[in-house]
Image (cartoon, rainbow, N blue to C red):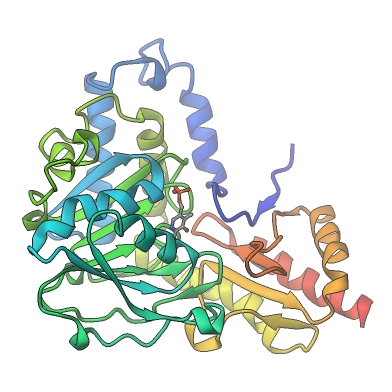
Amino acid sequence: MTRVFNFGAGPAMLPTSVMEKAQREFLDFANLGAGLIEISHRSKEFEQVLDEADQLMIKLAAIPSNYKILYVHGGAQMQFSAVPLNLINRQPARKAAYVESGNFAKLAAKEAARYGNITTAASSAEFDYDRIPDFNPSALDADTSYVHITSNNTIYGTRWQQFPDTGNIPLVADMTSELLSRRLDISKFGVIFAGLQKNLGPSGLACVIIREDLLDLALPETPNLLNYKTYADQHSLANTNNTFAIYMMKLVLEWLDELGGLDVIEAQNEAKAALIYDVIDNSEFYVGAAHPAHRSVMNVTFNLADNSLLDSFLAGALERGLYALKGHRNVGGARASIYNAMPVAGCQTLADYMQEFERANS
Ligand SMILES: *Cc1c(COP(=O)(O)O)cnc(C)c1O
């Protein structure tokens, strides 16, 4: 069997060594004679997995001690509900500001509007989200409960290069498509959340990193299993959590730690993205979709100047084991999602193929 280079946006490729380890342990975890997904979430074996996942996350992301890590059901978009339910009541005005940098940001604001007064603090809709909008936090009302941003816009291939200083107003960031891809100052954020399926593991679960003082503000009608305090008080085990997803995440974190952590992966991610952006920038055949100053290192979006060649470009890519390069329908063209697990060789193979395809078709 040969594994493809999987450029899918999510669920996305995981390191082969992680998949192999999970396979080896699948039938018999820790010599129990049973698989991890067959045993209790309250077993000491699973509790150990959970503890190790936390410790690795704290170490890799340099999470300060006044933050909690929660594993919340429902993937990233469930957080679009959980964030307002837990935070909008921080101020009696029930106001929150959303920076509209793409489709997920818009969906998050729409969901939040059920619970309070949502304002669009900045938007790049007029540019078809090819950039992060200018955002001036000092224009926010002081009684704003929180500010929501999407740190990496998966569909458009943009990211915040620097994060805004929102002072006393908690900054909430959807980091689904980039958590642990670069060094961050966690203390700048009130809440960070990420669905696991882009950079951390399987789908269906979100990792939430939250400052402790924000844990106990939920609206009374908040479902128990969306209340951050429930998760914090019971180590994310108020009910049966997704043990398999947490286990897979732990394996991914171990892999990242052995690789050398965020300094190493950040440099590798920059180098990987540069291989593809260089081809785009040195060609008139390919056109980058994102404004160069706002480019993502995780999702590289581009079009072919002659869009009629797209299908043949994608078919030729697949023949070379370059899988799932089709762009999102909102942007069209191609998108290379190159999360942590994508090896340099995958990006090099794609860059070589792009040049070869250009030569053959121009
Ligand atoms: C993929 C993605 C989501 C959606 O995740 P689900 O787990 O499917 O809800 C939300 N936000 C961002 C930034 C994403 O990349």
